[in-house]
Image (cartoon, rainbow, N blue to C red; front, side, top):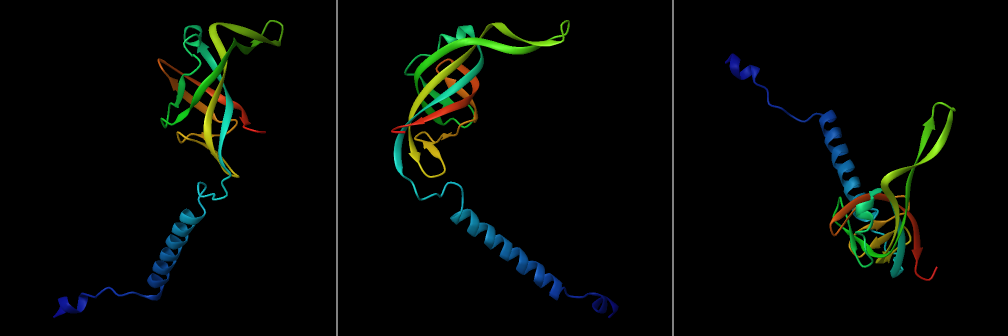
Length: 167
């Protein structure tokens, strides 16, 4: 008899009910917000435009600098999105600011065997009021640090300028 008296059934109390209702409401709100107000749901698209943008590739070996040719297709090294087609390549020296401890100044030093490259890419983009999304899925944003892959080479750099068609 004592064993039956010690066993209590679990039942909902007011606190448990409030916690469950709040969890369901928060979940419903987050689901609604992600479906209707996400960053990629901007429906005010103005259409497809041709975009030319420049990527500055830093500290590229001299041997790789000559491998990048017009017509090469760059691919994002992380997400494997197509970034665009190479239109032009400008090669410059790789320079670095160093400290001159003897004179207590800073100097610009050219680093041998390395180059900086300014590569201009062209791609078709879906333009909206908030973003440029390349046909390959790559999001084009100025200041974005990118890792690129091309046929036989790879490098990192930054998108430094964007030129939209007709602007």
